[in-house]
Every structure is written in structure tokens, then in C-alpha cells.
Image (cartoon, rainbow, N blue to C red):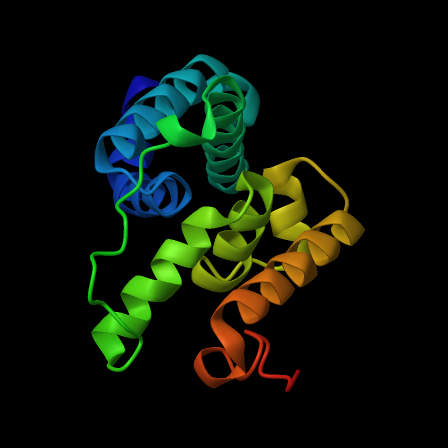
Length: 167
């Protein structure tokens, strides 16, 4: 059991860290989220058996731990880098930074749904499994999040939704 888990943890650590960082917007918190998730996955390892189930379980722990953390903290205590003064969406780097800042302003479940669907490229069903909700809830969370980003960023910066459909 120990070697199988160690192989899983080594093989998936990078992807899990990227996911946690996209949710948290803070490297230290992302490290903490991954460590806690891997610890809980280790405890549940015998029940999981299938590596895909272990991956989904670990992502679910990262998501729920991050959401719990945000619920306990006030908005002002949330870690994330602010967009530096003078950054505008006039170039690719500025656009990415601006989009990153706006993504961090979304509520945690909407951010998680977007990250899972479009950064991690999970299906709606896989996203629902990770988030512990229905496919309809995933669709709703993604739709609302995309609308918020489009409202904040405008059609010039965000001319199409992430599925490629025109607004």
C-alpha cells in the first residue's frame, strides 16, 4: 500500500499543486492544501483502490479544504496577489495577470468549477464528482462565473466564452 500511494503522490503532485494554486492564488496555501489532501488520501487509500478514484478524491479534498478555509476567513484575509498599478490588458502578460486577478475574485466554488472544466479539462461529470455536486450545478456555476468575468472584463478582453461560443 505504501509504495502505491508514494507513486501516486509523486506522479500527481505537480498537477495537484497547480490545481491548488489556481484555487488559492497563494503558493504557501497551495502547499498546505496539497499536503492536507495527500494526508487524507493516504488515510483513505485502501478504500480508493483505483488511481482515478484517488485523483478525484484528492482534488475533492483540496476543493473542500479551500472552501472551508475561505468560509472561516474574512475577505480581506484571503491571500492573493493584487494586480500591480499600471498593469492594463494591453498586452498578453497584462491580460493574463488581469484575468488571473479577476478569477481570484470569483467565489470559491465558481472558481473551482472553471479551473476544473477549462484548466484541468475535466468533463462536467468529472467536475461534479470532484465538487460533490450535480452536473446541473456545475453547468450553473460555470455559466455564472463566465458571465461575471465577461461583465468585469468586457467583451474586448473576454470576447468568447471558454467553450468557444460567442456571447
